[in-house]
Amino acid sequence: MAMSVGPADGEDEVVSAINTTPLVDVMLVLLIIFLITIPVVTTSIPVQLPKETIQVRESKPENIIISADASGAIYWYDARLPGTQALVDRLKKVAVMKPQPEVQIRGDLAAKYDAVGKIVYACQRAGIAKVSFITEPPPRGG
Image (cartoon, rainbow, N blue to C red; front, top):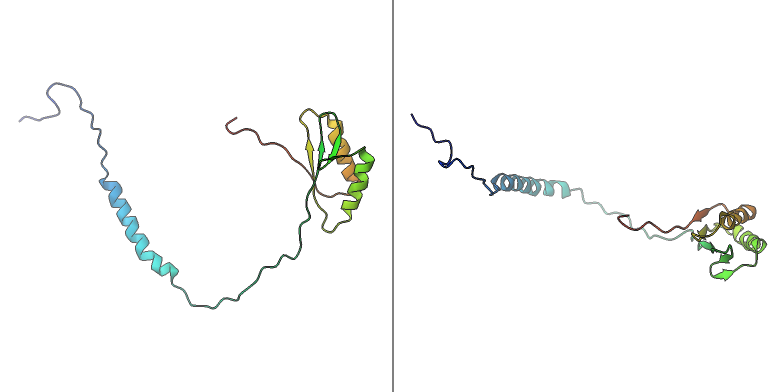
């Protein structure tokens, strides 16, 4: 009784073809299941839904951007302020607005903490409730 176990030269032959028959079978079964269940899901009781219009009830005020450059100068948007008292005076006018706008602080990377601290302290003295910091996101992949 003889048995053939492989090629006669002793080298194993690598099969590089992928059998896709099970994948196709599974995909066809899934397709059939979806085709059968979709009409059941979409069938519902016909109902006349009420019509609604969306109206903005409260307008959001524009955010205030305050910047501090490397030398410690303070800017209200693009206008340079003479000092922290001028900043406090402007912020007090903004603090009484309803709803109160958010103050966003942009501090230069080379600026000392003192310049940004003066802005935060001025916001506190004026009664500003929302203060945030604008930063630059790190580069992708780094």
